[in-house]
Amino acid sequence: MSGPAKRVDVLIVGAGPVGLLSATLLAGHGLSVAVVDEDWRPAVHAYAALLHPDVAALLGRLGLGDELRSRGRRIATVAFYGGGERRAELRLEGSAGAAAPALAIPQSSLEELLLAAAARRGVEPAWNHRLAAFELRPDGVVAWVDRLERVSGGYALAGTSRAVGDSTTVHARWLVGADGHRSAVRRILGSAFAEAGPGCVVGAFEFATPVETGDEVRVALDEGTIGTFWPLPDGRCRWGFELPADAAAVARASGGRPPVLLGRRAWLTIRPEVLDALLARRASWFPRRIADLTWSVAVRFDRRLAEPPGRGPVWLVGDAAHVTVPFGAWSLNRGLVEAAELAERIAGAGGYDRPVALEEWGATLSARWRKLLGPGAGYSAGPAADDWVRRNAALLAGCVPAGGEELERALAQVGLVPTGAS
Image (cartoon, rainbow, N blue to C red; front, side):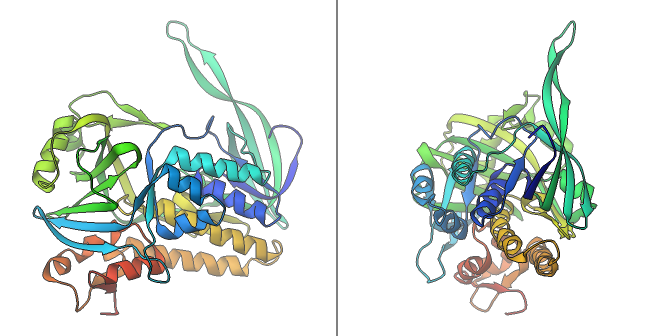
């Protein structure tokens, strides 16, 4: 992107799944789009993403359905366990009540498909380009983008760092921040990113699955803590268990092992025997003979919400706008839905002089997330809920890989209803 000043309809910061979907949809509306990302290349790791049914359907409408199904693992059931016993289950359903499965797929595969979809519409991300600053102008935004270069250095110990090679001025009618939880767009815009609920530390383990579980996610609840089991493609699976949040307990779980690099960050490794103890206590029904443990890490997750999520021609989507705990894969999936909603509104706004529809959408987005990040994600036990569901109602909704009306229909199967409707 280096060179003379550029003019585009939309500048997107961030070339992850949310940014790439935004670019594809906006270009499909006939808008000129530029995408920048400060990383050197797309994701090359196989960290799994769990796509909600409505998101799988959205991507299918872009012509990606066959590829997603061939690379992913179908998920149609969510089963809940407590005290070593199967307590409840629900089926994921589409708008007509028919089965509408979710999909577990490596995020690297998802990004590869979205990169190809964007390229078919003439959009190629500018890698190793970082947003330095932007200003609001009467006709949109002027942004300054730096091109980063690798610089070798060191005497006794050689290494590389990054430096600014040159800068480009970009004039855009709209700026979309899809640059993750450390969003530069959010910081420059001045939106708060306050805690909206308690966070947690999750121990994640990926390995060759010792048992066939079919097309279901399994959720293990134990004394107010959550564990989730996801079957993955190619005979693998992942467990994610809540761990004690204090640093000393996490350090004991690591036992001084070196960190592991997953994607673009290094994470604290967890000892394999910790997984054995977690399974024995919280999921005694699951085999404990674990082979081929690919990785095991401890990750801190927060619940945060950007307010406001945008102003005028600048809007945040995905992790730039909200983060939450990972058990229902909500942040990525709702971010993809928001990318589609925002693209429709930008395409229909007719220019910077008609921002009212965007302001209304931003208020709706904030209200939606305040509900999801609140106690019980906005759901509580109705008259049809049994005693076990009633006791665990505050935890169940956040473990279901669905959103919107699909989430409401799914939770109704176990007797959970929107808070206030019971």
